[in-house]
Length: 131
Image (cartoon, rainbow, N blue to C red; front, side, top):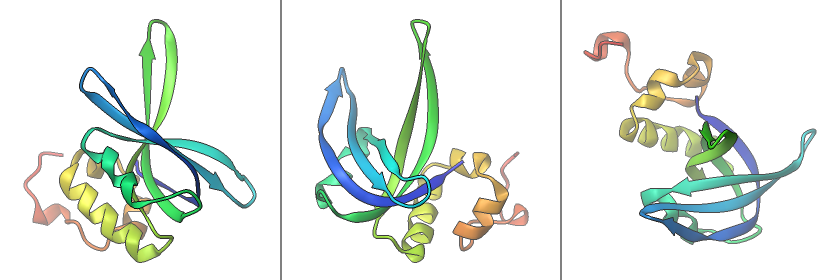
């Protein structure tokens, strides 16, 4: 499921390369009822996306939640798939692009979110996928 969060970039980290696995973390300050500092990350080919942004930019981040277990410890990451200005059209455009590249997100996305954020991806009659 894809989630969205609006906020102000507080910090942008360096690209970290660990045996070919690349990631770049950044901190987003959110406002409102549940304000706070949230760490997101871009991975692999997407780490350069943050080169276009600077601290104090106001953005919308599209992300999904990923959990792992390693050596008996559990970890949760917020994996960013899109970032841009706080604008509903940006969200629609980015999700259309990311769903095209990462079809597994279509399968896992909540239908009510899909209806609100996607203009038209496909309908059951339009595709021949088995799910």
